[in-house]
Image (cartoon, rainbow, N blue to C red; front, side):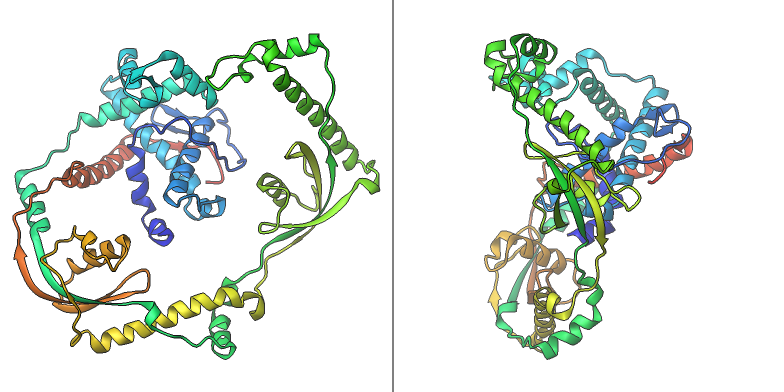
Length: 487
């Protein structure tokens, strides 16, 4: 999937940019610092619309979370870089800005009444099925979202939607008939599945080693860091009533119950004390950081460790901080680990290097076995697809993947998609999983099916093509200036 998405990311962003604003609960993800040009107030300007760093960071965060959902959590900064997520985030905003310029030329706007109507339709702002202002404020507050900023963002999204609705895409009768015909084509087939488990592969070192030698640079050790570090344990103090009351009055919004209501002073005292303890701990950690840099920390307090991604007891934030250290700047600012702070000193960085055969063997073996089984299945399919006899189906269409109980849903979809675009009466199809399906089309029939897709595939396809063309047209009309370096 990663390979496919990297190849088609140009089209993924076109799909994403016209979507409505995501739920405010999405987590924030950043990517570090960049150098700015003279116009530090904006990272880009499209026509008369400026794009701020805050918008760029949020765009990146939203895209990151969308990809993380697609990959079911198996998504990190390394993958984000390989997808060019930083550039995608900026492209997303520049494309939005192009449409906003178009909206300005039409003197379009979104009224407060239209905004309210939209907010009322969102379930996560409702109580007992009705929009509730307190729930609305509470949801935004819990997610650390400023009400004014959120409403401005929603208005922008609604304005983009309103602008695009001025250019409606409709389905023609002839196009509908084409789709109806396509989904009415049905084949009765005879098929046989060749699965990897029917093949046995030898995996001796004599066979594995030449395979590993051809691709040994793909099996690299992890980058590791030798560090020294000193801890600042959590400080726990007693505070007088005056200080507790003062901190409470200055930070009431931090002390809420499960329903989002602000706690009374007495009920919030433990939380107040915890915040004050954290504040004191950080203050002492910063003092220790300065002393450590000056060489004034007792050597007996220092500890040593070798840290790498797969063996990191300090957490992701600590590893990220350490990875940015250099011999010229070897000390990290205090990093929170649990309830304490740790200051790291980089001793050395151990670069990644190709693993030895023995180190890489456990990774090489499944790749080798999969490739050999795949090749064996292909040879078997080539020699037997013309004469095999398997299972005969009823008449099936491209949408009947549920009728193949001996394949996974993904495999069945992949098989039917390829089958109904093939010109061969007999043949075989290699699936992404490595399994091979041999088939023989015995008979064809045209059913009387009608497209009932609620999302209207014709309109969706035409909209995608139209929006891509619209963006190209607007790019010629409105000048785009990028003030940020590094993208």
